[in-house]
Amino acid sequence: MVTLEAAARIIQKPENETRVQTSIAPTDDLFDGNELFGIQAGQYLKKSRNRILADIEELTRTNRWEDIISLYHPAEEKIPELVQAGMDLRVREKVAFALGQVRQFDEAIKVLKVCVQVESNNFYSRASLAYTAYNSLYAAKNKEIFLAGNSRADRIALAHENFKKAQSLRPYGVTNFYRQGMLYSQIENKPKPALILFNTACSNWVNLSEKEQALRHQEKKNYIKSLYRSASLLLNAGKGFAALEQIKKCLEQDEKTNTVDLGFKYFALGKVNFHMDEYQKARDALLFALQSSSGSRSVDFIHELLARTYLALGKTDRALETIGKVPENARRPYYRWTEADVLCSAGRYDHAKKVLLDVVSRDKRSKHISLLRLAKIDYTLKSWEHAAQYAKKSVVFFREKWGNAYYEGLFWQALCTFKSGQVKESETILAELEDQCRFFPKLDRLAALIRGTAK
Image (tube, rainbow, N blue to C red):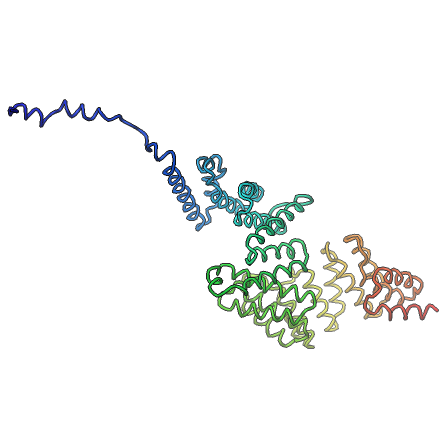
């Protein structure tokens, strides 16, 4: 029988309490063995990766690219446990995008190449690598970074390789066809393959069911931009009706979203109508383009085409008014060429020559166009010798700059040289043009003129 004294000792049991506590081994570890190895370890790493991806997503919303890079790049140093477990690819892809946003393209490409080496058929890695290479080329075009020679050619090849791979993995997509089309058209100036790709992007979208379009709604913007770009290329190829159809589809599909700026779309509509000799429709579209354009953005290209449209309509006064809308110091060479044409239409030849001579003194790339316009003005004024000299200078500049014969310059040089009385010299120039471009417009009539007199 337990006495009251003994019971009191059991209830208080300070010694017994101490023995119970010391019977469990103390630990400072945060994880037990199950969490460090086996199935639970994998679950822990997945949770860790998901937390990192959620963190990157949050930083992306506020464009905190430098924070993403400093926290998670390079992966081998910042997330070694995910690297060791082979669970780092999605993080690397997100980091590569951040690197691209701060124009560290070489480093971004290096990261994405690791992803492609690990999973060669990973669509996201291929598409990201293609886009990053393409974006770096665009940055170089805009003089944000420098790429030249072999590095530029290698970057183009890398973009094409990965666009094609991404397309093979998802042949019914839109975005990668659109972007490769932009690579061809904007970087390489190759309109034919670009048009094929833009058309593929368009047909891929149209062939999706309504449900699929809803699921992939983010790709519609590149369908719309493909319509816009294909319209421009079709027009340049002389296919006005097809271009008109595409730009009308673009306007219809983009009516609520304005993925492409409203001013750009109506400028394109005006340009198509202008080239189809629908000058009143062109005027209306261009006036609406000006009305729709933001005041903070340069719209000189709209004013320039509108001025040419007024010339075509025989409204020289309106053309003069329109061409004067842009400050003189902001008028680029192409704008001043139209300005000179408008002035000539108004009979103000001396002013037109002054405008063109100013362009000649500044323009290092397309001076031949201004020189040839000067030749045509002097031809109109029957100043044959001066006209011949300007035409000759246009031919010499073009050959020195581009290494090729300037056919139109040769034509006018031959004509003006003949008009100035130098028949033998004009025959020599004519022979060169015939050798270089036998079917140049009106060449046969020029030959008959020169050789008929020579005999």
